[in-house]
Length: 313
Image (cartoon, rainbow, N blue to C red; front, side, top):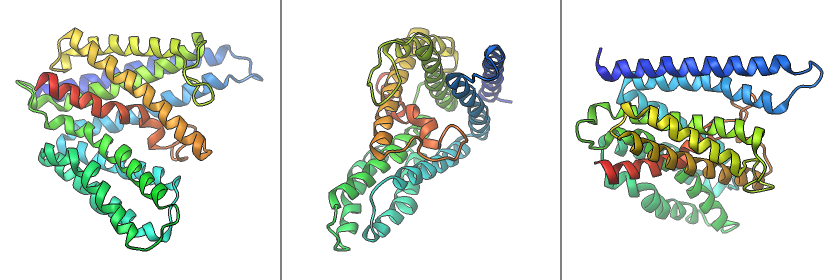
């Protein structure tokens, strides 16, 4: 057993221990609630914790299988998230070929470029080439009805669900001195600090939050975000041993990723409000779909990747 595998198993054990503690806490609070007066905030908290059990298991298995397993997992996540996103957009028959290219050409090529470590190409493939070529395919079908809206929504979907998500496995391709063989642990670090920070932001925001950041869009409060980011930084410092960062550097990286992720979730809330839906899909009972679960990680991944590349490679 390699040291990296041992660390992944240790992280999995620690994550399950935390989830057990969070589950017990929720059950204790639920037991104190009157049977005829359910607490919707507590029920949402418990549903989030329950969904975390599955997420930890899937990510843990992917990390143990190495680079190929991680690539397959996040390519599947991108496919499912792209489908969820495009379900809520305006499309006509003229866009069918462009959509087929997005799913079956652009998406797999993006992950091939990431897997091959072709940094320059995967960084511009969707923002430049897909941005230019897919609208040409739609325009050649001769339908100008809401053309700008249709192509813009397709590009936004690709940027969010494929380009941004692909930066998570791209962490394994970074040339980090004395760390490249352990780079898979950066994925665990990113997902844990962002998701735990999000969970704690939700808990503290409902407990002590008073000042909403974007009334009418999201229940997030400045107090909840401050507590969530602070907790993410503490968690990042405690997990610095699995990263190439010093403890203070790990805290700074965790804080930046968590903060960007939380504001990213507000962007997704605005999109859902614009589309008139509560969740992106109903794949996970009570918690929506892949985009709902990963909204913070989606926004945090490119920032975390480029900060790591700039300061540590």
